Image (cartoon, rainbow, N blue to C red; front, side, top):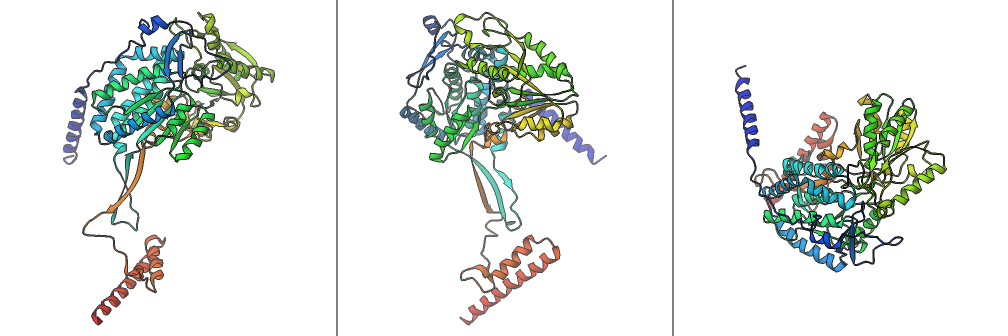
Length: 596
Protein backbone atom coordinates (compact mmCIF):
# COMPACT_ATOMS: atom_id res chain seq x y z
CA UNK A 1 0.00 0.00 0.00
CA UNK A 2 2.90 2.33 0.80
CA UNK A 3 4.08 1.99 -2.81
CA UNK A 4 0.70 2.65 -4.47
CA UNK A 5 -0.39 5.54 -2.27
CA UNK A 6 1.89 8.22 -3.82
CA UNK A 7 0.90 7.09 -7.31
CA UNK A 8 -2.81 7.41 -6.49
CA UNK A 9 -2.26 10.90 -5.07
CA UNK A 10 -0.35 11.98 -8.19
CA UNK A 11 -3.01 10.53 -10.49
CA UNK A 12 -5.78 12.31 -8.56
CA UNK A 13 -3.85 15.59 -8.59
CA UNK A 14 -3.32 15.26 -12.36
CA UNK A 15 -7.03 14.61 -12.93
CA UNK A 16 -8.01 17.62 -10.83
CA UNK A 17 -5.56 19.86 -12.69
CA UNK A 18 -6.90 18.66 -16.03
CA UNK A 19 -10.46 19.36 -14.90
CA UNK A 20 -9.57 22.85 -13.66
CA UNK A 21 -7.72 23.54 -16.91
CA UNK A 22 -10.87 22.65 -18.85
CA UNK A 23 -12.79 25.28 -16.87
CA UNK A 24 -10.49 28.03 -18.13
CA UNK A 25 -12.12 29.40 -21.31
CA UNK A 26 -10.04 29.97 -24.41
CA UNK A 27 -9.65 33.51 -25.61
CA UNK A 28 -11.64 33.23 -28.83
CA UNK A 29 -12.38 36.47 -30.70
CA UNK A 30 -15.76 36.97 -32.32
CA UNK A 31 -16.00 37.66 -36.03
CA UNK A 32 -18.36 39.86 -38.00
CA UNK A 33 -19.89 38.43 -41.16
CA UNK A 34 -21.99 40.49 -43.57
CA UNK A 35 -25.42 38.84 -43.64
CA UNK A 36 -27.27 41.50 -45.63
CA UNK A 37 -27.39 39.35 -48.78
CA UNK A 38 -29.09 36.42 -47.04
CA UNK A 39 -31.60 38.22 -44.82
CA UNK A 40 -35.11 38.31 -46.22
CA UNK A 41 -35.29 42.05 -45.73
CA UNK A 42 -32.02 42.61 -47.63
CA UNK A 43 -31.93 44.82 -50.69
CA UNK A 44 -31.39 41.86 -53.00
CA UNK A 45 -34.51 40.17 -51.71
CA UNK A 46 -36.65 43.28 -52.03
CA UNK A 47 -35.58 43.95 -55.58
CA UNK A 48 -35.43 40.41 -56.92
CA UNK A 49 -37.98 38.48 -54.89
CA UNK A 50 -39.94 37.07 -57.81
CA UNK A 51 -40.85 33.52 -58.78
CA UNK A 52 -38.14 31.95 -60.91
CA UNK A 53 -39.04 29.46 -63.64
CA UNK A 54 -35.88 27.54 -64.62
CA UNK A 55 -35.63 26.27 -68.21
CA UNK A 56 -36.80 22.70 -68.63
CA UNK A 57 -35.44 20.01 -70.90
CA UNK A 58 -31.96 21.52 -71.28
CA UNK A 59 -28.94 22.11 -69.12
CA UNK A 60 -27.75 25.52 -67.97
CA UNK A 61 -24.16 24.89 -69.06
CA UNK A 62 -24.19 27.67 -71.68
CA UNK A 63 -25.42 30.27 -69.17
CA UNK A 64 -22.57 32.53 -67.95
CA UNK A 65 -24.46 32.89 -64.68
CA UNK A 66 -25.47 30.38 -62.01
CA UNK A 67 -29.09 31.23 -61.26
CA UNK A 68 -30.23 30.56 -57.67
CA UNK A 69 -33.74 30.09 -56.30
CA UNK A 70 -35.54 28.53 -53.36
CA UNK A 71 -36.66 25.04 -54.47
CA UNK A 72 -39.53 24.97 -51.96
CA UNK A 73 -41.08 28.25 -53.16
CA UNK A 74 -39.28 28.96 -56.47
CA UNK A 75 -38.45 32.43 -55.09
CA UNK A 76 -35.47 33.96 -56.91
CA UNK A 77 -32.31 34.43 -54.84
CA UNK A 78 -29.83 35.93 -57.29
CA UNK A 79 -26.97 34.72 -59.44
CA UNK A 80 -23.23 34.08 -59.37
CA UNK A 81 -20.68 33.93 -62.20
CA UNK A 82 -19.87 30.66 -63.93
CA UNK A 83 -16.08 30.87 -63.86
CA UNK A 84 -14.06 30.09 -66.97
CA UNK A 85 -11.04 27.80 -67.05
CA UNK A 86 -8.67 30.77 -67.00
CA UNK A 87 -10.41 32.25 -63.96
CA UNK A 88 -10.23 28.93 -62.12
CA UNK A 89 -6.52 28.57 -62.86
CA UNK A 90 -5.96 32.08 -61.50
CA UNK A 91 -7.78 31.24 -58.26
CA UNK A 92 -5.72 28.07 -57.86
CA UNK A 93 -2.50 30.00 -58.45
CA UNK A 94 -3.44 32.45 -55.68
CA UNK A 95 -4.26 29.55 -53.36
CA UNK A 96 -0.91 27.93 -54.14
CA UNK A 97 0.98 31.06 -53.07
CA UNK A 98 -1.04 31.27 -49.87
CA UNK A 99 -0.39 27.60 -49.08
CA UNK A 100 3.37 28.05 -49.09
CA UNK A 101 2.97 30.53 -46.24
CA UNK A 102 0.31 28.55 -44.37
CA UNK A 103 2.37 25.35 -44.50
CA UNK A 104 4.70 26.99 -41.95
CA UNK A 105 1.87 27.89 -39.55
CA UNK A 106 1.73 26.36 -36.08
CA UNK A 107 -0.92 23.97 -34.85
CA UNK A 108 -1.74 26.60 -32.22
CA UNK A 109 -2.72 29.04 -34.97
CA UNK A 110 -4.72 26.37 -36.79
CA UNK A 111 -6.60 25.41 -33.62
CA UNK A 112 -7.48 29.05 -33.01
CA UNK A 113 -8.98 29.19 -36.50
CA UNK A 114 -11.15 26.18 -35.64
CA UNK A 115 -12.26 27.69 -32.32
CA UNK A 116 -13.31 30.92 -34.02
CA UNK A 117 -15.40 28.95 -36.51
CA UNK A 118 -16.94 26.80 -33.77
CA UNK A 119 -17.80 29.88 -31.72
CA UNK A 120 -19.52 31.51 -34.70
CA UNK A 121 -21.43 28.36 -35.67
CA UNK A 122 -22.81 27.81 -32.17
CA UNK A 123 -23.94 31.43 -31.87
CA UNK A 124 -25.50 31.56 -35.36
CA UNK A 125 -27.15 28.16 -35.72
CA UNK A 126 -30.51 29.55 -36.81
CA UNK A 127 -28.97 31.73 -39.51
CA UNK A 128 -26.84 28.92 -40.93
CA UNK A 129 -29.76 26.47 -40.94
CA UNK A 130 -32.15 28.99 -42.46
CA UNK A 131 -29.75 29.71 -45.32
CA UNK A 132 -29.35 25.97 -45.95
CA UNK A 133 -33.11 25.47 -45.79
CA UNK A 134 -33.84 28.23 -48.28
CA UNK A 135 -31.22 27.03 -50.76
CA UNK A 136 -31.96 23.28 -50.65
CA UNK A 137 -35.53 22.96 -49.36
CA UNK A 138 -34.66 20.98 -46.22
CA UNK A 139 -36.30 21.57 -42.85
CA UNK A 140 -34.60 23.45 -40.03
CA UNK A 141 -34.31 20.27 -37.95
CA UNK A 142 -32.70 18.37 -40.81
CA UNK A 143 -30.30 21.27 -41.33
CA UNK A 144 -29.37 21.25 -37.66
CA UNK A 145 -28.73 17.51 -37.64
CA UNK A 146 -26.83 17.31 -40.91
CA UNK A 147 -25.15 20.70 -41.13
CA UNK A 148 -24.51 21.99 -37.61
CA UNK A 149 -23.95 18.91 -35.47
CA UNK A 150 -21.71 17.06 -37.91
CA UNK A 151 -19.55 20.14 -38.51
CA UNK A 152 -19.23 20.93 -34.80
CA UNK A 153 -18.30 17.31 -34.14
CA UNK A 154 -15.57 17.43 -36.79
CA UNK A 155 -14.13 20.66 -35.42
CA UNK A 156 -14.14 19.27 -31.88
CA UNK A 157 -12.35 16.09 -33.03
CA UNK A 158 -9.70 18.07 -34.88
CA UNK A 159 -9.13 20.28 -31.84
CA UNK A 160 -8.74 17.21 -29.66
CA UNK A 161 -6.81 14.81 -31.90
CA UNK A 162 -5.81 16.51 -35.15
CA UNK A 163 -2.27 17.47 -34.20
CA UNK A 164 -1.60 14.02 -32.76
CA UNK A 165 -2.34 12.29 -36.06
CA UNK A 166 -0.28 14.72 -38.14
CA UNK A 167 2.88 14.46 -36.06
CA UNK A 168 5.63 12.07 -37.19
CA UNK A 169 4.74 8.48 -36.37
CA UNK A 170 7.60 6.17 -35.42
CA UNK A 171 7.55 2.62 -36.74
CA UNK A 172 9.58 -0.52 -36.05
CA UNK A 173 12.74 -0.82 -38.13
CA UNK A 174 12.82 -4.60 -38.52
CA UNK A 175 15.60 -7.06 -37.77
CA UNK A 176 18.10 -5.94 -40.40
CA UNK A 177 17.77 -2.25 -39.54
CA UNK A 178 17.95 -2.29 -35.75
CA UNK A 179 20.52 0.50 -35.92
CA UNK A 180 18.03 2.75 -37.73
CA UNK A 181 15.08 4.91 -36.66
CA UNK A 182 12.03 4.70 -38.91
CA UNK A 183 9.19 7.18 -39.03
CA UNK A 184 6.37 8.45 -41.20
CA UNK A 185 5.99 12.18 -41.75
CA UNK A 186 2.84 13.91 -42.94
CA UNK A 187 3.42 16.97 -45.10
CA UNK A 188 0.81 19.14 -46.87
CA UNK A 189 0.03 18.14 -50.45
CA UNK A 190 -0.40 21.71 -51.66
CA UNK A 191 -3.73 22.80 -53.14
CA UNK A 192 -6.71 20.54 -52.55
CA UNK A 193 -9.61 20.78 -54.98
CA UNK A 194 -13.08 19.86 -53.73
CA UNK A 195 -16.20 19.52 -55.87
CA UNK A 196 -19.14 19.12 -53.53
CA UNK A 197 -22.82 18.34 -53.86
CA UNK A 198 -25.84 20.41 -52.94
CA UNK A 199 -27.44 18.17 -50.29
CA UNK A 200 -25.49 19.58 -47.32
CA UNK A 201 -24.23 22.97 -48.57
CA UNK A 202 -22.72 24.02 -45.21
CA UNK A 203 -21.12 20.75 -44.13
CA UNK A 204 -19.99 19.77 -47.63
CA UNK A 205 -17.90 22.97 -47.75
CA UNK A 206 -16.61 22.80 -44.18
CA UNK A 207 -15.82 19.07 -44.17
CA UNK A 208 -13.00 19.08 -46.77
CA UNK A 209 -11.95 22.63 -45.86
CA UNK A 210 -11.33 21.80 -42.20
CA UNK A 211 -9.17 18.76 -42.99
CA UNK A 212 -7.25 20.55 -45.75
CA UNK A 213 -6.49 23.72 -43.80
CA UNK A 214 -5.66 21.96 -40.53
CA UNK A 215 -3.15 19.75 -42.36
CA UNK A 216 -1.41 22.79 -43.87
CA UNK A 217 -3.00 22.89 -47.33
CA UNK A 218 -4.97 25.48 -49.20
CA UNK A 219 -8.26 24.47 -50.81
CA UNK A 220 -10.41 25.59 -53.73
CA UNK A 221 -14.02 24.40 -53.47
CA UNK A 222 -16.45 24.30 -56.36
CA UNK A 223 -19.92 24.40 -54.89
CA UNK A 224 -22.89 22.88 -56.68
CA UNK A 225 -24.81 25.05 -59.10
CA UNK A 226 -27.86 24.00 -57.07
CA UNK A 227 -26.48 25.47 -53.82
CA UNK A 228 -24.26 28.40 -54.84
CA UNK A 229 -26.23 31.03 -52.95
CA UNK A 230 -25.69 29.42 -49.58
CA UNK A 231 -22.15 28.30 -50.43
CA UNK A 232 -20.98 31.85 -51.14
CA UNK A 233 -22.39 33.07 -47.84
CA UNK A 234 -20.72 30.26 -45.90
CA UNK A 235 -17.48 31.23 -47.63
CA UNK A 236 -17.70 34.65 -45.96
CA UNK A 237 -17.68 32.94 -42.55
CA UNK A 238 -14.48 31.10 -43.44
CA UNK A 239 -12.83 34.24 -44.80
CA UNK A 240 -13.58 36.18 -41.62
CA UNK A 241 -12.19 33.42 -39.41
CA UNK A 242 -9.01 33.15 -41.47
CA UNK A 243 -8.48 36.89 -41.32
CA UNK A 244 -8.89 36.80 -37.53
CA UNK A 245 -5.89 34.46 -37.17
CA UNK A 246 -3.71 36.28 -39.69
CA UNK A 247 -3.88 33.59 -42.36
CA UNK A 248 -2.81 34.56 -45.89
CA UNK A 249 -5.48 35.73 -48.30
CA UNK A 250 -6.82 33.21 -50.82
CA UNK A 251 -5.97 30.23 -48.59
CA UNK A 252 -9.56 29.08 -49.11
CA UNK A 253 -11.46 29.84 -52.29
CA UNK A 254 -15.07 29.03 -53.21
CA UNK A 255 -15.88 29.05 -56.92
CA UNK A 256 -19.15 28.75 -58.82
CA UNK A 257 -19.97 27.38 -62.24
CA UNK A 258 -20.82 24.28 -64.22
CA UNK A 259 -18.89 21.39 -65.78
CA UNK A 260 -16.19 23.56 -67.37
CA UNK A 261 -15.41 25.09 -63.99
CA UNK A 262 -15.06 21.69 -62.34
CA UNK A 263 -12.90 20.30 -65.14
CA UNK A 264 -10.52 23.24 -64.88
CA UNK A 265 -10.23 22.73 -61.13
CA UNK A 266 -9.34 19.05 -61.50
CA UNK A 267 -6.60 19.93 -63.97
CA UNK A 268 -5.00 22.53 -61.68
CA UNK A 269 -4.82 21.08 -58.16
CA UNK A 270 -2.76 18.46 -56.30
CA UNK A 271 -5.67 16.30 -55.09
CA UNK A 272 -9.41 16.13 -55.75
CA UNK A 273 -12.20 15.35 -53.30
CA UNK A 274 -15.52 14.79 -55.06
CA UNK A 275 -18.99 14.26 -53.63
CA UNK A 276 -21.60 13.51 -56.26
CA UNK A 277 -22.84 10.99 -58.80
CA UNK A 278 -20.96 7.94 -60.18
CA UNK A 279 -21.18 9.31 -63.72
CA UNK A 280 -19.47 12.58 -62.87
CA UNK A 281 -17.04 10.72 -60.59
CA UNK A 282 -15.83 8.66 -63.56
CA UNK A 283 -15.25 11.81 -65.61
CA UNK A 284 -13.24 13.32 -62.76
CA UNK A 285 -11.10 10.18 -62.58
CA UNK A 286 -10.37 10.43 -66.32
CA UNK A 287 -9.37 14.07 -66.00
CA UNK A 288 -7.28 13.42 -62.89
CA UNK A 289 -5.43 10.67 -64.76
CA UNK A 290 -3.93 13.32 -67.03
CA UNK A 291 -1.94 14.78 -64.13
CA UNK A 292 -1.87 11.60 -62.00
CA UNK A 293 -3.24 13.27 -58.88
CA UNK A 294 -4.97 11.33 -56.07
CA UNK A 295 -8.76 11.30 -55.98
CA UNK A 296 -11.28 10.66 -53.22
CA UNK A 297 -14.76 9.83 -54.51
CA UNK A 298 -17.96 9.69 -52.44
CA UNK A 299 -20.59 8.76 -54.98
CA UNK A 300 -23.78 8.12 -53.09
CA UNK A 301 -25.41 4.83 -52.28
CA UNK A 302 -28.44 2.66 -51.85
CA UNK A 303 -28.06 1.53 -48.27
CA UNK A 304 -29.67 -1.65 -47.03
CA UNK A 305 -31.74 -1.49 -43.83
CA UNK A 306 -32.12 -5.01 -42.37
CA UNK A 307 -34.61 -5.80 -39.61
CA UNK A 308 -34.52 -9.18 -37.86
CA UNK A 309 -37.54 -10.73 -36.16
CA UNK A 310 -36.28 -10.19 -32.58
CA UNK A 311 -36.54 -6.39 -32.52
CA UNK A 312 -38.92 -3.87 -30.96
CA UNK A 313 -41.01 -3.23 -34.07
CA UNK A 314 -42.34 0.20 -33.04
CA UNK A 315 -38.88 1.45 -32.09
CA UNK A 316 -37.21 0.30 -35.31
CA UNK A 317 -40.11 1.48 -37.48
CA UNK A 318 -39.57 5.08 -36.35
CA UNK A 319 -35.84 4.85 -37.13
CA UNK A 320 -36.63 3.29 -40.51
CA UNK A 321 -38.93 6.13 -41.52
CA UNK A 322 -36.34 8.71 -40.49
CA UNK A 323 -33.72 6.78 -42.50
CA UNK A 324 -36.00 6.73 -45.56
CA UNK A 325 -36.86 10.43 -45.36
CA UNK A 326 -33.16 11.26 -45.13
CA UNK A 327 -33.12 10.29 -48.79
CA UNK A 328 -35.78 12.90 -49.51
CA UNK A 329 -33.88 14.76 -52.18
CA UNK A 330 -32.60 17.31 -49.68
CA UNK A 331 -30.32 15.20 -47.55
CA UNK A 332 -27.85 12.34 -47.82
CA UNK A 333 -28.47 9.15 -49.70
CA UNK A 334 -30.26 7.45 -46.82
CA UNK A 335 -31.62 3.94 -46.57
CA UNK A 336 -33.28 3.01 -49.85
CA UNK A 337 -33.78 -0.75 -49.48
CA UNK A 338 -35.58 -2.25 -46.51
CA UNK A 339 -35.38 -5.97 -45.77
CA UNK A 340 -37.62 -7.25 -42.96
CA UNK A 341 -37.86 -10.78 -41.56
CA UNK A 342 -41.06 -12.48 -42.70
CA UNK A 343 -42.19 -13.17 -39.10
CA UNK A 344 -42.65 -9.45 -38.39
CA UNK A 345 -43.11 -8.23 -41.94
CA UNK A 346 -46.83 -7.43 -41.70
CA UNK A 347 -46.62 -5.70 -38.33
CA UNK A 348 -43.58 -3.71 -39.42
CA UNK A 349 -45.25 -2.54 -42.65
CA UNK A 350 -48.36 -1.59 -40.70
CA UNK A 351 -46.37 0.45 -38.18
CA UNK A 352 -44.34 2.18 -40.85
CA UNK A 353 -47.47 3.01 -42.87
CA UNK A 354 -49.06 4.60 -39.82
CA UNK A 355 -46.01 6.81 -39.24
CA UNK A 356 -45.66 7.84 -42.88
CA UNK A 357 -49.32 8.86 -43.12
CA UNK A 358 -48.66 11.37 -40.36
CA UNK A 359 -45.75 12.97 -42.24
CA UNK A 360 -46.45 16.27 -43.95
CA UNK A 361 -44.41 18.05 -46.59
CA UNK A 362 -44.34 21.73 -47.38
CA UNK A 363 -42.20 24.86 -47.61
CA UNK A 364 -39.94 24.37 -44.55
CA UNK A 365 -39.99 28.01 -43.46
CA UNK A 366 -43.73 28.49 -44.04
CA UNK A 367 -44.96 26.20 -41.28
CA UNK A 368 -44.28 23.12 -39.20
CA UNK A 369 -43.54 20.43 -41.75
CA UNK A 370 -41.67 17.14 -41.44
CA UNK A 371 -40.27 17.36 -44.97
CA UNK A 372 -39.29 20.17 -47.28
CA UNK A 373 -38.94 20.39 -51.03
CA UNK A 374 -36.76 18.53 -53.50
CA UNK A 375 -33.71 20.54 -54.45
CA UNK A 376 -33.15 19.21 -57.96
CA UNK A 377 -35.33 20.38 -60.80
CA UNK A 378 -37.43 17.63 -62.44
CA UNK A 379 -36.28 15.07 -59.85
CA UNK A 380 -39.86 14.30 -58.84
CA UNK A 381 -40.42 13.02 -62.40
CA UNK A 382 -37.60 10.49 -61.91
CA UNK A 383 -39.11 9.36 -58.61
CA UNK A 384 -42.51 8.92 -60.19
CA UNK A 385 -40.91 6.90 -63.00
CA UNK A 386 -39.30 4.53 -60.48
CA UNK A 387 -42.62 4.11 -58.69
CA UNK A 388 -44.50 3.42 -61.94
CA UNK A 389 -41.93 0.82 -63.03
CA UNK A 390 -42.37 -0.99 -59.70
CA UNK A 391 -46.18 -0.85 -59.88
CA UNK A 392 -46.15 -2.27 -63.41
CA UNK A 393 -44.10 -5.22 -62.11
CA UNK A 394 -46.47 -6.03 -59.24
CA UNK A 395 -45.57 -3.68 -56.40
CA UNK A 396 -48.24 -1.97 -54.25
CA UNK A 397 -48.33 1.38 -52.47
CA UNK A 398 -49.63 1.00 -48.91
CA UNK A 399 -49.15 4.52 -47.54
CA UNK A 400 -48.34 8.08 -48.55
CA UNK A 401 -47.79 11.30 -46.64
CA UNK A 402 -49.52 14.63 -47.23
CA UNK A 403 -48.74 18.11 -48.62
CA UNK A 404 -49.51 21.55 -47.31
CA UNK A 405 -49.24 25.23 -48.35
CA UNK A 406 -47.53 24.54 -51.68
CA UNK A 407 -47.69 27.30 -54.29
CA UNK A 408 -48.68 26.41 -57.83
CA UNK A 409 -45.22 27.15 -59.20
CA UNK A 410 -43.49 24.82 -56.73
CA UNK A 411 -45.70 21.71 -57.00
CA UNK A 412 -43.05 19.79 -58.94
CA UNK A 413 -40.54 20.35 -56.11
CA UNK A 414 -42.41 18.09 -53.69
CA UNK A 415 -42.89 14.35 -53.54
CA UNK A 416 -44.98 12.56 -50.91
CA UNK A 417 -43.22 10.05 -48.62
CA UNK A 418 -44.27 6.66 -49.97
CA UNK A 419 -44.30 3.12 -48.57
CA UNK A 420 -44.30 0.43 -51.24
CA UNK A 421 -44.41 -3.37 -50.80
CA UNK A 422 -44.24 -6.51 -52.94
CA UNK A 423 -41.02 -5.23 -54.48
CA UNK A 424 -38.15 -7.28 -55.87
CA UNK A 425 -34.74 -6.73 -57.41
CA UNK A 426 -36.03 -6.77 -60.99
CA UNK A 427 -37.48 -3.32 -60.32
CA UNK A 428 -35.46 -0.16 -61.01
CA UNK A 429 -36.54 1.13 -57.61
CA UNK A 430 -34.41 -1.54 -55.93
CA UNK A 431 -31.36 -1.01 -58.15
CA UNK A 432 -31.07 2.68 -59.03
CA UNK A 433 -30.33 5.40 -56.52
CA UNK A 434 -33.66 7.14 -55.91
CA UNK A 435 -32.60 9.98 -53.64
CA UNK A 436 -36.20 10.43 -52.62
CA UNK A 437 -38.62 9.66 -49.77
CA UNK A 438 -39.57 6.22 -51.02
CA UNK A 439 -39.56 3.22 -48.71
CA UNK A 440 -39.60 -0.14 -50.59
CA UNK A 441 -39.89 -3.07 -48.17
CA UNK A 442 -38.99 -6.69 -48.98
CA UNK A 443 -39.11 -9.71 -46.71
CA UNK A 444 -36.45 -12.35 -46.04
CA UNK A 445 -36.45 -15.72 -44.28
CA UNK A 446 -32.83 -16.31 -43.24
CA UNK A 447 -29.83 -14.18 -42.37
CA UNK A 448 -27.97 -15.55 -45.38
CA UNK A 449 -30.79 -14.40 -47.64
CA UNK A 450 -30.69 -10.92 -46.09
CA UNK A 451 -26.96 -10.69 -46.73
CA UNK A 452 -27.40 -11.87 -50.32
CA UNK A 453 -30.10 -9.29 -50.97
CA UNK A 454 -28.09 -6.49 -49.39
CA UNK A 455 -25.04 -7.30 -51.51
CA UNK A 456 -27.09 -7.48 -54.71
CA UNK A 457 -26.40 -3.86 -55.58
CA UNK A 458 -23.83 -1.90 -57.54
CA UNK A 459 -23.57 0.47 -54.58
CA UNK A 460 -21.70 -0.12 -51.36
CA UNK A 461 -21.78 2.93 -49.13
CA UNK A 462 -23.44 1.80 -45.90
CA UNK A 463 -25.88 -0.51 -44.17
CA UNK A 464 -27.89 -0.72 -40.96
CA UNK A 465 -28.72 -4.00 -39.20
CA UNK A 466 -31.22 -4.37 -36.37
CA UNK A 467 -31.49 -7.37 -34.08
CA UNK A 468 -32.16 -8.11 -30.42
CA UNK A 469 -28.80 -9.87 -30.48
CA UNK A 470 -25.90 -7.51 -31.13
CA UNK A 471 -23.72 -10.47 -31.98
CA UNK A 472 -26.16 -11.54 -34.69
CA UNK A 473 -26.40 -7.99 -36.06
CA UNK A 474 -22.61 -7.69 -36.15
CA UNK A 475 -22.30 -11.02 -37.97
CA UNK A 476 -24.77 -9.92 -40.65
CA UNK A 477 -23.16 -6.49 -41.04
CA UNK A 478 -19.67 -7.99 -41.35
CA UNK A 479 -20.77 -9.86 -44.48
CA UNK A 480 -22.21 -6.84 -46.29
CA UNK A 481 -19.80 -5.32 -48.82
CA UNK A 482 -19.88 -1.65 -47.87
CA UNK A 483 -17.74 1.00 -46.22
CA UNK A 484 -20.00 1.99 -43.32
CA UNK A 485 -22.09 -0.22 -41.01
CA UNK A 486 -24.38 0.74 -38.12
CA UNK A 487 -25.55 -1.83 -35.57
CA UNK A 488 -29.05 -1.21 -34.22
CA UNK A 489 -28.93 2.36 -35.49
CA UNK A 490 -28.77 4.30 -38.73
CA UNK A 491 -26.22 6.89 -39.91
CA UNK A 492 -24.66 7.21 -36.45
CA UNK A 493 -21.22 6.52 -37.97
CA UNK A 494 -20.96 9.99 -39.40
CA UNK A 495 -21.36 11.57 -35.99
CA UNK A 496 -18.25 9.65 -34.91
CA UNK A 497 -15.78 11.89 -36.70
CA UNK A 498 -12.85 9.73 -35.64
CA UNK A 499 -14.13 7.16 -38.14
CA UNK A 500 -13.38 7.21 -41.88
CA UNK A 501 -16.33 7.66 -44.22
CA UNK A 502 -16.64 6.27 -47.74
CA UNK A 503 -17.81 3.32 -49.78
CA UNK A 504 -16.92 0.68 -52.35
CA UNK A 505 -18.14 -0.28 -55.82
CA UNK A 506 -20.19 2.53 -57.41
CA UNK A 507 -20.21 4.37 -54.09
CA UNK A 508 -16.60 5.37 -54.73
CA UNK A 509 -13.31 4.88 -52.94
CA UNK A 510 -10.98 6.70 -50.60
CA UNK A 511 -12.07 8.10 -47.26
CA UNK A 512 -12.73 11.43 -45.68
CA UNK A 513 -13.23 12.06 -41.96
CA UNK A 514 -11.22 10.35 -39.26
CA UNK A 515 -7.49 9.75 -39.24
CA UNK A 516 -7.63 8.30 -42.75
CA UNK A 517 -9.39 11.36 -44.17
CA UNK A 518 -7.05 13.80 -42.45
CA UNK A 519 -3.91 12.00 -43.61
CA UNK A 520 -5.38 11.69 -47.11
CA UNK A 521 -4.71 15.43 -47.40
CA UNK A 522 -1.02 14.78 -46.81
CA UNK A 523 2.09 13.70 -48.62
CA UNK A 524 2.99 10.59 -46.63
CA UNK A 525 6.77 10.39 -46.45
CA UNK A 526 8.86 7.49 -45.06
CA UNK A 527 12.06 8.58 -43.33
CA UNK A 528 14.95 6.40 -42.10
CA UNK A 529 18.00 7.68 -40.20
CA UNK A 530 20.82 6.30 -38.04
CA UNK A 531 19.72 5.61 -34.48
CA UNK A 532 23.10 6.27 -32.86
CA UNK A 533 24.64 8.76 -35.25
CA UNK A 534 27.57 9.51 -35.50
CA UNK A 535 28.80 6.58 -33.42
CA UNK A 536 27.29 3.85 -35.60
CA UNK A 537 27.02 4.45 -39.33
CA UNK A 538 25.96 2.31 -42.24
CA UNK A 539 28.89 0.37 -43.62
CA UNK A 540 28.74 -2.11 -46.47
CA UNK A 541 30.16 -5.49 -45.32
CA UNK A 542 33.46 -6.42 -46.96
CA UNK A 543 32.19 -9.57 -48.75
CA UNK A 544 29.66 -7.57 -50.79
CA UNK A 545 31.76 -4.48 -51.44
CA UNK A 546 32.94 -3.98 -55.03
CA UNK A 547 34.58 -6.04 -56.31
CA UNK A 548 32.32 -8.64 -54.69
CA UNK A 549 34.18 -11.51 -53.00
CA UNK A 550 33.86 -15.11 -54.16
CA UNK A 551 31.95 -15.98 -50.98
CA UNK A 552 29.70 -12.92 -51.31
CA UNK A 553 26.57 -14.96 -51.95
CA UNK A 554 27.45 -17.40 -49.15
CA UNK A 555 27.65 -14.40 -46.84
CA UNK A 556 24.22 -13.11 -47.96
CA UNK A 557 22.68 -16.58 -47.63
CA UNK A 558 23.95 -16.95 -44.06
CA UNK A 559 22.90 -13.40 -43.19
CA UNK A 560 19.32 -14.01 -44.37
CA UNK A 561 19.06 -17.21 -42.33
CA UNK A 562 20.57 -15.54 -39.26
CA UNK A 563 18.03 -12.73 -39.42
CA UNK A 564 14.87 -14.53 -40.50
CA UNK A 565 15.26 -18.26 -39.88
CA UNK A 566 12.50 -20.01 -37.94
CA UNK A 567 14.79 -22.28 -35.92
CA UNK A 568 16.86 -20.50 -33.25
CA UNK A 569 19.73 -23.01 -33.43
CA UNK A 570 19.97 -22.75 -37.21
CA UNK A 571 19.96 -18.96 -36.89
CA UNK A 572 22.86 -19.13 -34.42
CA UNK A 573 24.82 -21.40 -36.73
CA UNK A 574 24.20 -19.00 -39.61
CA UNK A 575 25.35 -16.08 -37.46
CA UNK A 576 28.57 -17.91 -36.63
CA UNK A 577 29.15 -18.41 -40.36
CA UNK A 578 28.52 -14.70 -41.03
CA UNK A 579 31.10 -13.75 -38.42
CA UNK A 580 33.53 -16.31 -39.79
CA UNK A 581 33.28 -14.93 -43.33
CA UNK A 582 33.70 -11.37 -42.08
CA UNK A 583 36.75 -12.38 -40.03
CA UNK A 584 38.30 -14.15 -43.02
CA UNK A 585 37.76 -11.12 -45.23
CA UNK A 586 39.22 -8.78 -42.63
CA UNK A 587 42.26 -11.06 -42.15
CA UNK A 588 42.93 -11.08 -45.90
CA UNK A 589 42.59 -7.32 -46.06
CA UNK A 590 45.05 -6.86 -43.19
CA UNK A 591 47.49 -9.28 -44.83
CA UNK A 592 47.35 -7.39 -48.09
CA UNK A 593 48.04 -4.10 -46.31
CA UNK A 594 51.12 -5.60 -44.55
CA UNK A 595 52.52 -6.89 -47.87
CA UNK A 596 52.07 -3.46 -49.36
